[in-house]
Image (cartoon, rainbow, N blue to C red; front, side, top):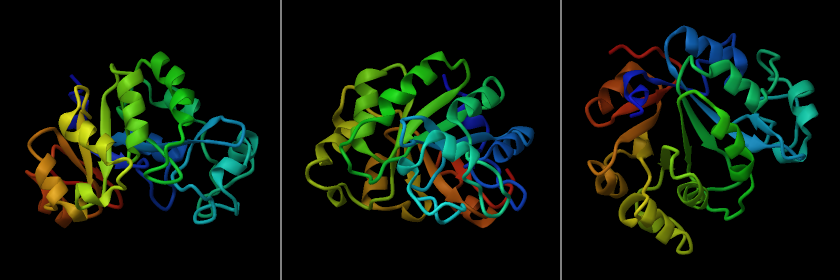
Length: 243
C-alpha cells in the first residue's frame, strides 16, 4: 500500500529552478520527467476555488501584494504572475489532471496558522480527491484539519506535519488533537512529516519508530546523508539526490 511514497523522492513544490517557479505546471512537469513524486500546496481563493500556491500572502514571489484569500480565482490564474518566470498560479483541478497516473502527490492543506480551527478547504477539496484516480496523500500542520480528514475520509492516507520540538509547544486547546493523531487515537496519522533541522528533538524521538517518518526540506547531498537511515523518504529542493 502506498509503495510509491517510499520508492521515489518527493520534489518540494515540484522540481523548480530558474526556469520553473515553485508550485507551477512547469515545475510539476519537470518533476515528472525526472521521475519524482511531487509535494504541493493547496488553498482557496476569495470565491472558494482551489489553487496551488504556498504562501498565504502573494508578495514574496509574485506581482500581487495581497492575500490569496482576498483575490478571485480568475485573478489568481490569469493576472497574478511569478516574478522570476512570469508563470501563472495553477488551478488545482488542472494539476490533478496533469499528474494523474504519472506520479504520486503529497497534497498539503495550507492555513492562516498552524492552530486555526477554521475549516473550509477540507470540504472543498474532498470531491476532487474522491474522483482522482492517481496516487496521493493529504497532510497539514494543522491538527484540526487532520482530525477532520481522519473523521470524514478514513480511506485517505494522512500525514501530520510539524516543526515543533515538544508536544508542549502546541497551544493547550489543540494539544489533545495532536496527541490523538500521533499517539492515542484509533485513527492516527499514517505518517509523520518533520522539519529536517529538528530531527532528534523530544517530539521526534517520541514519534520515530511508531509510524513512517519523512523530512523536509533537504537542500543538499550533505543534508541527505545526515538523515539517511533515519527517515523513510525525503522532500527535497535545489539539488538532485544521489542514492
